[in-house]
Image (cartoon, one colour):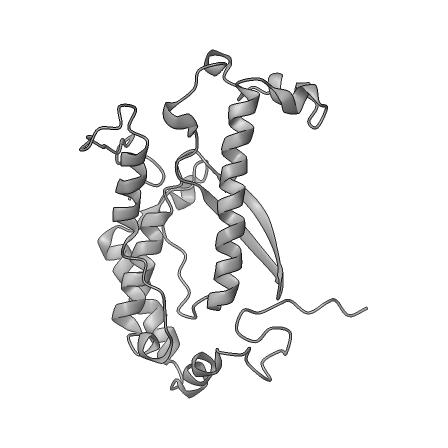
Length: 233
């Protein structure tokens, strides 16, 4: 029995026959690339990552202690309308995550109402008992979240996992964009790509917003476990 076709951000379900609306320039760029050119650019990107030390480690895999970041010269694409919908959903999800943490370490109404069985939370080894009733400044527990998505259709996304501790992958995203700008500058002329270089300023503003004293000029720092951490870069 034939399986259901996978959804492709560029082609949808058309199996390469017709690109999705708005992405015709990207499909044409791929189709017009000389033989071997995309592979050459892919290799150039991987060499640059390796030379710059843009790597991550996989714990428990001694044979692959350092790997370069995954990179695909063919970009994943979203329309502005798709991203607007995703952005609203992700913001809602992060607010929900913070509300959940605040509740289980506070009044625990979600447990009292039987929405989630108590033992799933209270008997979990990761439940930090000393944090009970301890509220962070302005009630914000997860300041930055890295949410992994899987797309299964034009309007359907699933969350693979929520990274709410230290989502360090944003540095790889920034380097990915810099690499695309160097290797494929013509793509940014063909398509109205939203910039990502404001992220450091947004991170700073987020840190400033949770200053416990609401200082006009708070001191913000980022802590790191050091160069032997798996995602030190």
